Length: 410
Image (tube, rainbow, N blue to C red):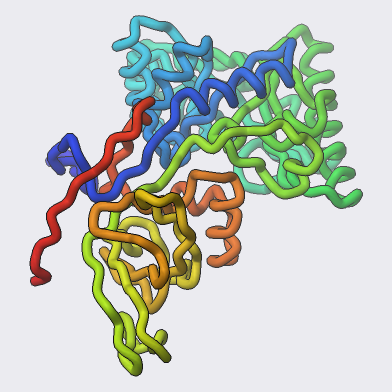
């Protein structure tokens, strides 16, 4: 029996009580901005994890229209999906899997013209065996571990660098593999401390040492090392390609990179919902589970249909959302514990009513920063945690008011 995916069978409706609005114009703007800042190299757009939670089908089409011809993903399922989108648009583009693929799926890699990352020589042998057994040849890039210590062929000492070059040469000679590229991943490129910069330079130098040894034997590969942080902060690390990830979606990799670049990236996702219920909270009454918030005086409370099952974590309590009313936009704090599917906001003094749109984040870059701060995490995680049951909707150029008739609570 084939596996099923969470929420994959939910119906697609025209209107939604909760949705993530994806601004494709902002995405294209960011892509062109980053491309201009990193001229002279190929731009690999990282669309793993459903384009960092933004919906790969929407984002890949937009990036294709902007001229992107190289994508990177995490797994074979994502790769096949991206390939399908490219085929539907009648555009050929490279698709690189940055993570592990079961060697028995070598035929799927070939059939879909997907590039697979080689994690180790042992992995290369297994993938080669399966490819030869199917009389196929798999396109691959070899990953070098220069200090991330996650995946890749170890190259963290002089001895390991020497052995890594020999290993890559052996992979190059395998009949069932077509070795086309070589890459590494920086562990601390988003940090501003001198020790972090020195470590990134050390990783890069280790990578260049292997690259040089291969070149001496006439092996020239497509090389890439820079992630968003390195691509923005240090142009000398741009080799044949740079991998553009979080920055594409309007989020600086860190406060340090944001301060250094001042690129003016635009947020691509806006998480929006609406007020579904309002009531008056009398003094002495508490809101939600545990009674964490008790009214000292009369308060106006609005319920919005978003909770931790949608990726709006309990740790976000106290965060201020933006309520859009007929009289303007107002900030309103989340009060009481966030529930699985709902939470409450204090709209005292705000002319809020049922049906008013509430923006969780997306109006300003600082929205997401504040949300991440609340949960002591990073903006990447806040984006990726937005649940699959939240519809992703391409932004319309005209704002449509969402109407909702308040119903009696069950």
